[in-house]
Image 1 (cartoon, one colour):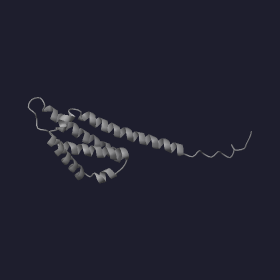
Image 2 (cartoon, helix red, strand yellow; image 1 turned 180 degrees about the horizontal axis):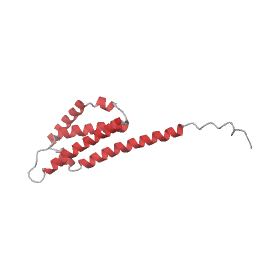
Image 3 (tube, one colour; image 1 turned 90 degrees about the vertical axis):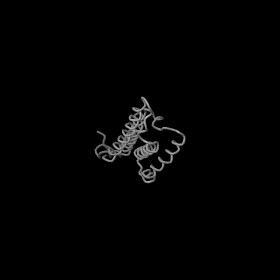
Image 4 (tube, helix red, strand yellow; image 1 turned 180 degrees about the vertical axis):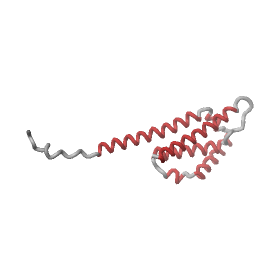
Amino acid sequence: MAEKTDELSALAGQAAGLETAQEQAAEGQGGAPAAPVQTNAQILAGAFHLGREVSCAVLGLQSPRMVLDDPTLQQLGDVWGAVADKRGWDISAILGDYAAEVAAVMLSITVGVKLMKAAGAELDARERKPDPAPSPDAVGNVG
């Protein structure tokens, strides 16, 4: 149970980090354009990391963490961040103030799928439970 709580806490922490970065970027939109709080590469690496953690939690697998280790996710963020920079895309502006909503959806999907799997496992366990054998008194005795 502690592992599930840790996974959800980690996801919530990542979501809060994305939300804070987006809020800080939005605060600078009043006058002159503010420098991004996070680079495109950092935002994308964080999004890839969040996606990996959600997939591990939802699927109950560890292989995504083995294949998509932190350095690999950082490389993905760097190369796709370079593409975004080349094209003039500001990922924080594209996300706007929706970081909280995106984070809430990701966490809700994770919790919902875990609940669905747990309920399904409980129902399967109930169905597999053997019926108790009838007592010897109940078999063949007619009052």
